[in-house]
Image 1 (cartoon, rainbow, N blue to C red):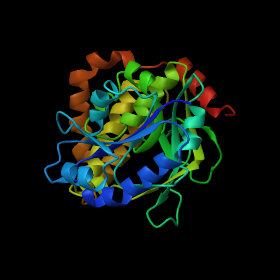
Image 2 (cartoon, one colour):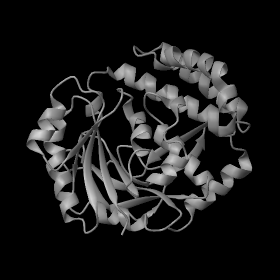
Image 3 (cartoon, rainbow, N blue to C red):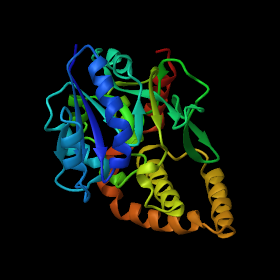
Length: 307
């Protein structure tokens, strides 16, 4: 049985950890293999670390050199010895049997990552599922399919609650800083794993409850929407072939920009030009990310195959 580290990312999140840490410790205790619960603290300015050490003495605390959002995992993973890292946001609760279904898949050599099924905080609605890549109106899209609750392959596993092979993660150099500070870094990571011939799996027998965007409570909705759109665009331009549907894409873009002008948020009109200018300035550094249509088709065929 491979060793496991439950790595909880935290920044001033004691109000969330009060819910998560008891369930993480219970899940680790119920797991039959070797496991550690570790809080990776992103330089909290409150007393989070002291509180954890006092209230949960079995939980390790590691303080990141800086508040680097999810990219602190890149630093952290290179310094751990466990075979499997379970990346966890602090705004979760875990089922007692959370670990075993994930770890089971990672005993196989070519599996890169496995994600759990998530419910909303009240447990009334499933909020995750497998993901497929689609091409609509000149743009690539991906969404969770909560109706599909069987073990299967998935385009990506969400960075807030997934288990992964630590050595493979380090080999991929972790999360890609093109997508800093957040959004799409998990899509990019898993897509690079698929390119290596590894697999990503959705496993609904592992369950979490997620308080959606609770860790981003200090950001406005407009700011989050802009950040998400920025990285969605960067993912399109950096990775996927865009020679198909050029005129459809331009027409769709024009409609989106005009529609943005007519709304209060104006997210497209504010975000698209700035993101395009940034991408043109840095794209020479990211040419290695681009796939052609043939390679993309091969990868998508693998994702569609039976698990």
